[in-house]
Image (cartoon, rainbow, N blue to C red; front, side, top):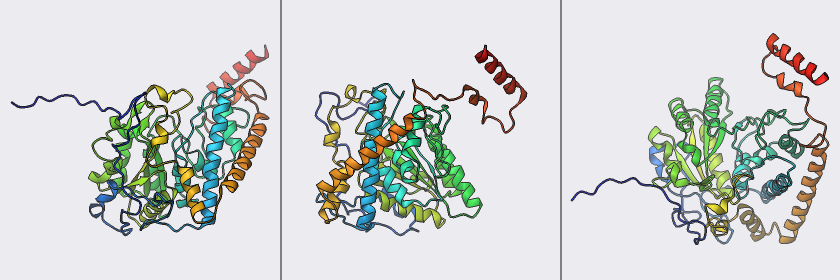
Length: 412
């Protein structure tokens, strides 16, 4: 008798109260994936989308063909940025819990993604980030004070109070505005990259979305345009296993890797250990060089884990084991880089503790300065009349009329 069809509903491997289970992850030993030539055909490197590019092994040594041989001094700088990101996040999370900002999202457990890829890109490359790319902004020169002021929506807020907290931008740093409408940044990145190619520049674009966003239409529209026009763009999927409370299987992660999403269009995919800074840097540099040489787009899946809550509005213990992060087989990105530097004789626990204290002091000083430009409850406050600015090149009469009316009401 023929079997009847039935609806398949993806289910996470563990729920609250269960033992964490990451057996669904297809892992590979460090150094086991080969590194192809920059000009390799997509059909010849399909294995990169199902394997896992790793450099740091279980003994914290850099091994294999993807080892970028980064100078220890550069790795120390990378560790500093990652640690600054985590300390900044922790401080801002506490500040939100104190009711001093309205909302926050941290990058806990994903810091290597932003730092490793920022290191591999050039200053002229345009970035279209997601809301967990704080370290990307820091690395490219955005001041902590300015990021804090944006979260406070105060008189120094770069967005003038018009954006949700953490939706930063950085024009001078070539970083596009973060959008809360997920995956819209993908078509923007592809369009910018197409324009760069039309102008004959060697600048490329890079964008980031989460695993859940791959189910959005914008994701697929962007891949089609990138493939057809061979746009010089790196499209990153940060697979942190959870789209808010929805397991990555609901976005299709059960069937094939997210890195394989572009293969049908001829876009090569690389699946990378997202908690290994060296692997991230190496894969991103490979994709960037390929794009600059006319090789077109690359889709990179960064396998990581969202260690904290989705946002300050979320409680992850309601949908996954409370201490699941401690069992994640790819470990903690900061600790892995720290242990690698110690193993090669260029770091120590004492130096790490000293750096932590220095960065905590830096973040605290930035917070004290940010408050001087106003908070949610204490002035100075943004001028309400500024809501009429930056809408048109020349303010039309009807908005000028509304501005005058508002000022009259305030003055009465």
